[in-house]
Length: 231
Image (cartoon, rainbow, N blue to C red; front, side, top):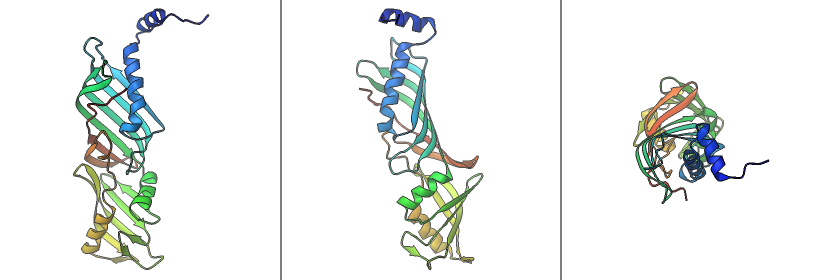
Protein backbone atom coordinates (compact mmCIF):
# COMPACT_ATOMS: atom_id res chain seq x y z
CA UNK A 1 0.00 0.00 0.00
CA UNK A 2 1.54 3.34 -1.00
CA UNK A 3 2.51 5.84 1.68
CA UNK A 4 0.28 8.91 1.38
CA UNK A 5 0.74 10.79 4.64
CA UNK A 6 3.14 13.75 4.31
CA UNK A 7 3.84 13.53 8.03
CA UNK A 8 4.88 9.90 7.69
CA UNK A 9 7.08 10.75 4.72
CA UNK A 10 8.78 13.53 6.67
CA UNK A 11 9.31 11.24 9.62
CA UNK A 12 10.90 8.61 7.42
CA UNK A 13 13.09 11.26 5.77
CA UNK A 14 14.42 12.49 9.10
CA UNK A 15 14.86 8.94 10.38
CA UNK A 16 16.99 8.08 7.36
CA UNK A 17 19.16 11.14 7.89
CA UNK A 18 17.71 13.07 4.94
CA UNK A 19 16.79 16.74 5.26
CA UNK A 20 13.68 17.33 3.12
CA UNK A 21 14.23 21.09 3.13
CA UNK A 22 17.77 20.63 1.80
CA UNK A 23 16.42 18.31 -0.90
CA UNK A 24 13.80 20.88 -1.87
CA UNK A 25 16.39 23.67 -2.13
CA UNK A 26 18.69 21.40 -4.16
CA UNK A 27 15.94 20.66 -6.68
CA UNK A 28 14.99 24.33 -6.95
CA UNK A 29 18.59 25.39 -7.58
CA UNK A 30 19.06 22.60 -10.15
CA UNK A 31 16.01 23.84 -12.01
CA UNK A 32 17.41 27.38 -12.30
CA UNK A 33 21.02 26.59 -13.24
CA UNK A 34 20.46 26.21 -17.02
CA UNK A 35 19.32 29.84 -17.11
CA UNK A 36 22.10 31.03 -14.80
CA UNK A 37 25.08 29.27 -16.38
CA UNK A 38 23.81 27.44 -19.45
CA UNK A 39 22.05 24.27 -20.60
CA UNK A 40 23.78 21.04 -19.63
CA UNK A 41 23.46 17.30 -19.90
CA UNK A 42 22.86 17.44 -16.16
CA UNK A 43 23.42 19.34 -12.93
CA UNK A 44 23.80 17.85 -9.47
CA UNK A 45 23.39 20.11 -6.43
CA UNK A 46 24.27 19.27 -2.84
CA UNK A 47 23.31 21.55 0.06
CA UNK A 48 25.25 20.85 3.26
CA UNK A 49 24.55 22.09 6.76
CA UNK A 50 21.31 23.94 6.09
CA UNK A 51 19.82 25.50 9.21
CA UNK A 52 16.12 25.69 8.53
CA UNK A 53 15.55 28.37 11.19
CA UNK A 54 17.80 30.91 9.47
CA UNK A 55 18.12 29.52 5.92
CA UNK A 56 21.91 29.55 6.25
CA UNK A 57 23.95 26.73 4.74
CA UNK A 58 27.59 25.86 5.25
CA UNK A 59 28.15 24.99 1.63
CA UNK A 60 26.39 24.41 -1.68
CA UNK A 61 28.22 22.40 -4.34
CA UNK A 62 27.24 22.04 -7.97
CA UNK A 63 28.47 19.55 -10.54
CA UNK A 64 27.61 20.30 -14.15
CA UNK A 65 28.28 17.89 -17.00
CA UNK A 66 28.59 19.04 -20.61
CA UNK A 67 27.60 22.61 -19.77
CA UNK A 68 26.96 24.90 -22.73
CA UNK A 69 27.30 28.59 -21.76
CA UNK A 70 26.42 31.13 -24.44
CA UNK A 71 29.44 32.38 -26.38
CA UNK A 72 31.84 29.86 -24.85
CA UNK A 73 33.07 26.35 -25.63
CA UNK A 74 31.30 23.40 -24.05
CA UNK A 75 32.49 22.78 -20.50
CA UNK A 76 33.02 19.06 -20.16
CA UNK A 77 32.75 19.47 -16.41
CA UNK A 78 31.99 22.40 -14.14
CA UNK A 79 32.49 22.23 -10.38
CA UNK A 80 31.03 25.11 -8.40
CA UNK A 81 31.26 25.68 -4.65
CA UNK A 82 29.27 28.33 -2.79
CA UNK A 83 30.28 29.26 0.74
CA UNK A 84 28.45 31.34 3.34
CA UNK A 85 25.04 30.87 1.75
CA UNK A 86 21.73 32.14 3.06
CA UNK A 87 18.52 30.97 1.40
CA UNK A 88 15.40 33.08 1.84
CA UNK A 89 12.61 30.49 1.91
CA UNK A 90 9.83 33.10 1.66
CA UNK A 91 11.35 34.87 -1.35
CA UNK A 92 12.81 31.57 -2.64
CA UNK A 93 16.16 32.99 -3.61
CA UNK A 94 19.80 32.91 -2.55
CA UNK A 95 19.87 36.00 -0.39
CA UNK A 96 23.62 35.83 0.30
CA UNK A 97 26.64 34.04 -1.12
CA UNK A 98 29.87 35.10 0.55
CA UNK A 99 32.14 33.34 -1.91
CA UNK A 100 31.71 31.32 -5.09
CA UNK A 101 34.53 29.46 -6.78
CA UNK A 102 34.41 27.30 -9.86
CA UNK A 103 36.62 24.95 -11.83
CA UNK A 104 35.79 24.47 -15.51
CA UNK A 105 37.30 21.74 -17.68
CA UNK A 106 37.40 22.25 -21.46
CA UNK A 107 38.49 19.47 -23.84
CA UNK A 108 40.42 20.21 -27.05
CA UNK A 109 37.66 18.37 -28.93
CA UNK A 110 35.20 21.03 -27.70
CA UNK A 111 37.51 24.03 -28.03
CA UNK A 112 38.27 23.33 -31.70
CA UNK A 113 34.65 23.55 -33.00
CA UNK A 114 34.08 26.67 -30.90
CA UNK A 115 37.03 28.41 -32.57
CA UNK A 116 35.86 27.17 -35.97
CA UNK A 117 32.38 28.62 -35.43
CA UNK A 118 33.06 31.77 -33.43
CA UNK A 119 36.59 32.84 -34.29
CA UNK A 120 36.77 32.20 -38.05
CA UNK A 121 39.51 29.60 -37.56
CA UNK A 122 39.02 26.95 -40.21
CA UNK A 123 39.66 23.25 -39.52
CA UNK A 124 41.45 23.84 -36.21
CA UNK A 125 43.43 21.18 -34.37
CA UNK A 126 44.68 21.88 -30.85
CA UNK A 127 47.54 20.31 -28.92
CA UNK A 128 47.95 21.08 -25.22
CA UNK A 129 51.14 20.90 -23.16
CA UNK A 130 51.43 21.25 -19.38
CA UNK A 131 51.63 23.51 -17.56
CA UNK A 132 49.95 26.07 -19.87
CA UNK A 133 51.24 25.54 -23.43
CA UNK A 134 49.15 25.14 -26.58
CA UNK A 135 49.61 24.79 -30.32
CA UNK A 136 46.79 25.65 -32.71
CA UNK A 137 46.97 24.46 -36.31
CA UNK A 138 44.38 25.70 -38.82
CA UNK A 139 43.80 26.77 -42.40
CA UNK A 140 43.79 29.17 -44.11
CA UNK A 141 42.24 32.33 -42.59
CA UNK A 142 41.70 33.88 -39.15
CA UNK A 143 40.59 37.37 -38.34
CA UNK A 144 41.20 38.70 -41.85
CA UNK A 145 44.69 37.21 -42.10
CA UNK A 146 44.96 34.92 -45.13
CA UNK A 147 47.59 32.52 -46.44
CA UNK A 148 47.53 30.64 -49.73
CA UNK A 149 44.82 28.01 -49.90
CA UNK A 150 45.93 24.63 -48.62
CA UNK A 151 48.76 26.04 -46.51
CA UNK A 152 48.31 25.43 -42.78
CA UNK A 153 49.20 27.96 -40.12
CA UNK A 154 50.63 26.79 -36.81
CA UNK A 155 50.46 29.04 -33.75
CA UNK A 156 52.36 28.25 -30.54
CA UNK A 157 51.97 30.02 -27.23
CA UNK A 158 50.59 29.99 -23.69
CA UNK A 159 47.15 30.08 -22.17
CA UNK A 160 46.84 32.97 -19.72
CA UNK A 161 44.08 34.33 -17.47
CA UNK A 162 43.49 37.99 -18.19
CA UNK A 163 40.56 40.31 -17.41
CA UNK A 164 38.48 37.36 -16.24
CA UNK A 165 38.92 35.38 -19.46
CA UNK A 166 41.29 32.82 -20.99
CA UNK A 167 43.54 34.28 -23.67
CA UNK A 168 45.91 32.52 -26.08
CA UNK A 169 49.16 34.48 -25.90
CA UNK A 170 50.78 33.56 -29.22
CA UNK A 171 54.58 33.57 -29.28
CA UNK A 172 55.24 32.11 -32.73
CA UNK A 173 53.36 31.67 -35.99
CA UNK A 174 54.64 29.48 -38.80
CA UNK A 175 53.32 28.62 -42.25
CA UNK A 176 55.05 26.15 -44.57
CA UNK A 177 57.96 26.12 -42.11
CA UNK A 178 58.44 29.90 -42.22
CA UNK A 179 58.26 32.08 -39.11
CA UNK A 180 55.75 34.83 -39.90
CA UNK A 181 57.02 37.16 -37.17
CA UNK A 182 55.81 38.93 -34.03
CA UNK A 183 53.39 41.29 -35.80
CA UNK A 184 51.43 38.42 -37.30
CA UNK A 185 51.49 36.59 -33.97
CA UNK A 186 50.00 39.63 -32.25
CA UNK A 187 47.31 40.07 -34.92
CA UNK A 188 46.27 36.45 -34.68
CA UNK A 189 46.18 36.56 -30.88
CA UNK A 190 43.80 39.51 -31.09
CA UNK A 191 41.67 37.73 -33.70
CA UNK A 192 40.97 34.57 -31.71
CA UNK A 193 40.90 35.86 -28.13
CA UNK A 194 39.35 35.23 -25.73
CA UNK A 195 39.14 31.49 -26.25
CA UNK A 196 37.16 30.93 -23.02
CA UNK A 197 34.85 33.65 -21.72
CA UNK A 198 32.31 32.89 -18.97
CA UNK A 199 31.61 36.49 -17.98
CA UNK A 200 28.34 36.66 -19.94
CA UNK A 201 26.67 34.10 -17.69
CA UNK A 202 24.32 35.35 -14.99
CA UNK A 203 26.83 33.91 -12.51
CA UNK A 204 29.41 36.38 -13.91
CA UNK A 205 32.21 33.83 -13.69
CA UNK A 206 35.64 35.48 -13.85
CA UNK A 207 38.63 33.26 -14.70
CA UNK A 208 41.49 33.83 -12.25
CA UNK A 209 43.91 31.08 -13.30
CA UNK A 210 44.31 28.59 -16.13
CA UNK A 211 46.42 25.49 -16.64
CA UNK A 212 46.72 22.40 -18.82
CA UNK A 213 45.99 19.24 -16.88
CA UNK A 214 45.23 15.67 -18.00
CA UNK A 215 44.79 16.73 -21.63
CA UNK A 216 42.32 19.54 -20.92
CA UNK A 217 42.18 23.28 -20.28
CA UNK A 218 41.35 23.78 -16.60
CA UNK A 219 40.15 27.25 -15.63
CA UNK A 220 39.69 28.42 -12.05
CA UNK A 221 37.07 31.13 -11.60
CA UNK A 222 35.10 33.15 -9.09
CA UNK A 223 31.49 34.23 -9.46
CA UNK A 224 28.39 35.69 -7.88
CA UNK A 225 25.15 33.74 -7.50
CA UNK A 226 23.61 35.94 -4.83
CA UNK A 227 20.09 36.91 -5.82
CA UNK A 228 19.48 33.65 -7.68
CA UNK A 229 15.71 33.23 -7.69
CA UNK A 230 14.21 29.73 -7.54
CA UNK A 231 10.61 30.83 -8.07
